[in-house]
Image (tube, rainbow, N blue to C red; front, side, top):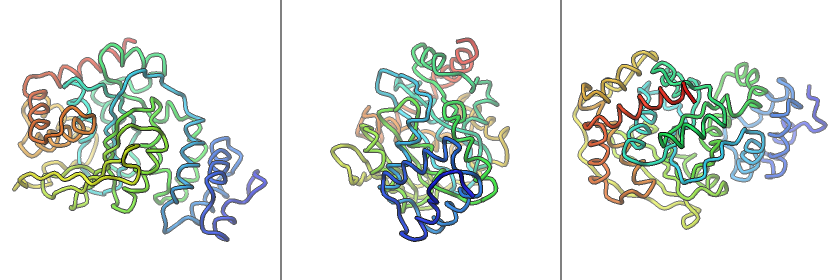
Length: 339
């Protein structure tokens, strides 16, 4: 069964929830390889049908952050990231929105991985665009210092997560690990725009982020199910911070688009890379470009560049139109391959 003296799956079945300390010890055992595949599958099964409690999530995050390779960024920085799992097969919106924000002068540390529940993960598409996703901590700091942006590949900086890979594969369903990635950026970013696949986890992830000392997190989900801001349905946005540990509702409004969501859907990595290049070269459809513009605008607002949506959209649009966003991508490709 397990090399651990405690059967956490049994505890969960008996008590439903673990304390923060118990969840910490459980996650530490998983990441150390002390809990074997069979027991981890049993843990996933015991938690099936519910999300972690805030205490469980805090313990899990603390243990995971202890095991990660830290990237010592010394300034405030933004991460735009989604949980995935909305099932809508959209291109990598948060990835290109991150590039646009960096082009607009916001320091960006993008954390991401390969595809799990989507057709194309941020690591997949950036690799396809020529970015070296395998840089380590020292190189990452140099890249960030040189161009104000860097991509951190989750598997590179969270090597202990490999100890859960086989169990997750065999289990084959969504687990709390799907929620974990966005909350354990190795650089400990100060600001984050977080897209969520389910309204229920918005508060859980937001409250958990406050425990990581993040200055401001905007949790976003659109009413059509997108884990980003949609052009076709207004979003629900909550801000979490030390001032708003339980969340503060953010109201934004804009005219909905008459185009089709099919314009932002993809089937494989190459399609996503092409759309990104089309956007940055000012050759994409209006739906594709404006989807990025409004999501980059929310990133700019998360970082405090402006409180006005129209002004934020104008800044994002100019970063694309002027060619600054394309230049930022080219810089990321060049520097990541030469640091």
